[in-house]
Amino acid sequence: MHAPILGSLSLAWPDEAACAACAQALAASPALDDALIELDGPLGAGKTSFTRHLLRALGVAGRIKSPSYAVVEPHAWTGADGRPRQAWHFDFYRFGDPREWEDAGLRELFAGPGLKLVEWPALAGPDRPACDLRLELAPVADEGSRSVLAQARSPRGMQLIDALRPAH
Image (cartoon, rainbow, N blue to C red; front, side, top):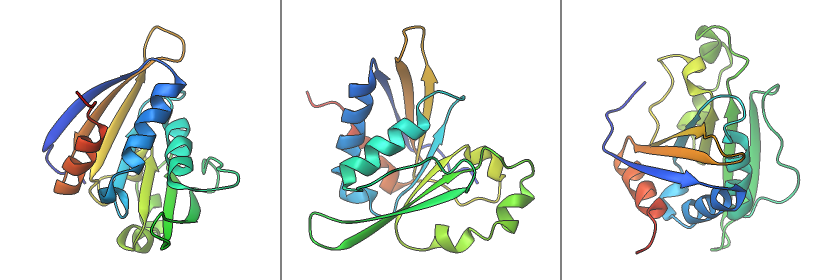
């Protein structure tokens, strides 16, 4: 389901360090706790890399693997305030029919607490929950460089975009 775009921000990631810095800025936002973030872009655009950087910035330890085959990978860590936190990393790349969204039984995870990071969201079909923030990643001519369009789809998404704005 697509909510209206409340605001947007264009970013450039000239290298992996810029991607990591953006993830670090987002991780510092209190609005991130129960956010639903969609990551869209072609293969190799950096969706999983950004997710790994974000989860590391949040404090997730251990291996962070792509959920391409498992569809969802759970992650848990203790926040700076000492409270337990959780995130769910979804990858719908292998979905061939939007009905697989319903068949997978993921609605409860999306309705529950925790950060939700979704790669290939369109393949889950139109009945998926609306996101707070959508990041459209696109490789550019320079090797390793990315352009990113951040779109806020909720008031929480606007707070997340504010966290991504470069400081002046």
